[in-house]
Amino acid sequence: MEADDLHILVVDDEARVRQAVRRVMEPDGARVSEAVNGREGLAALQQDAADLVLVDLMMPVMDGMEFLEQARRLYPHLAVVVITGYATLEKAVAAMKQGADDFLAKPFKPKELRLVVERLVKQVRTLRDMAIEKSRTRALVDAMSNGVMVTNAEGRVVLTNPSLRRAFGLVEDQVIDKPLEQALPCPEVVETMGRVLAQSEGDYQAVTCQTTGAVEGDEVFLQVTCVPFVDGRGLLVGALAVFDDVTAWRRLDALKNEFVSTVAHEIASPLSAVLGQLQVLGQELPGPLNPKQAHLVERARARVTGIINLSKDLLDLAKIEAGALGEPEEVDLAPLLEEAVDLLAERARQKDQTLRLEAEGPLPKVMGVAPELLEVLVNLVSNAVKYTPDGGEITVTARSQDNAVVIQVSDTGLGLTPEEAAKIFERFYRVKNQDTRHIVGTGLGLDIVKRVVNKHGGHIAVDSQPGQGSTFTVTLPALGQTPTQH
Ligand code: ADP
Image (cartoon, rainbow, N blue to C red; front, top):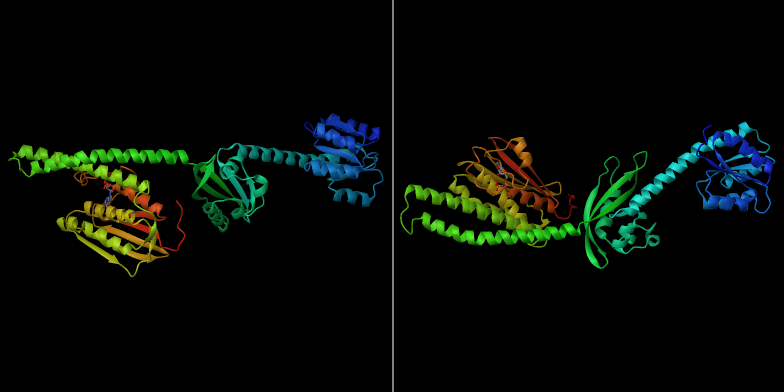
């Protein structure tokens, strides 16, 4: 038997027994220490932890039963073999009840000792590995700058780390075993963890949410990822919440927004003046232009218009990201749809296009910021008008479906290849080909649309065929429904 890394403690008042263990086990590589009674045995354990203890039941000062009781309490993972002088069944049963792992009758043969130790070595090693794994995980979790909280399947707290306790002023002893809603002062996370723990088998997914905390009096913004975890049979046994401090990103983002707004605004104002002057030139009010001059003025006007539109889009984006367009409220989409279609009716007419709005039945309200949702609709309808040649058809429909409002903007325009369709929601992406060469744009519109839709708990998809047209579908959760997190 390989017992290289095994430390065995023999607690017996009989020197003969102690020596016998030494004689049998040391050649196998085990390290053997001795103690003559229970009290010395406990002292020896305290000084030099053992993996396995062989303990006699009958000893002076402190007997084997008392030793067993105390050792079990202090070292739950210790393997203990009881040595009984007169191997009575009652004694053996009593020792096993007290937590002994096995027993050995005196006098024992070397083979019997080896057999008992061999049986326990596997258990000792597994327990040791588990203890190492546990301590490694604990050290990792405790050293993390992210806050961590773990609950069992009933939603009771089983673990918190120092970073989390700092962010919420928690004391570990006061939260362990408490239901989450009593332990954690953030309803958003409690609600999200509740949803994670209520997931059905085989469909477990991580869900994110945001909350705020305070570190040394300063407010911190936290992005929280709630992850379910399962046992060996795949059954949900608890959930883990990891809190990521995104305060610095939020501040940077706010700064970036402010910077972008200022620059966009500073660019747009003088350029609007330049545009006005170019228009005056183009209308030949100061005097006639020759065809070459008229062409140059027209090109300058188109380029300046492009930069002004870019500034406007950047301003819109900054406002939406800063939440400056308003607070969420109950929104009726019907008037917004009409407004969006009205705003683009003139442009569609100039291109001989038919622009129709078809709302099917009454629409449920949604929770949202009306100017942001209007921006979404105007962007989609404006794109449909822009990317559909003269004489085409644009249809806007809205209907209620599966606790959601589904809005579709369809056109008979240029359409998109699957590769293009996969990229159009990226910031600044524009399809570049013969057909789009003369269409001005910034590549920001659909990025804004997607952000707003996601922020409202909805999603957007595009279905398109090159040369056949495109259909953009926006799905927003109807009021009273829990929005999907993104
Ligand atoms: P912009 O229109 O300012 O270029 P968007 O972000 O609104 O920016 O759109 C990105 C790109 O997606 C456009 O440049 C265009 O190539 C393509 N696109 C958008 N809407 C449509 C549409 N209805 N039909 C065909 N292509 C479209």
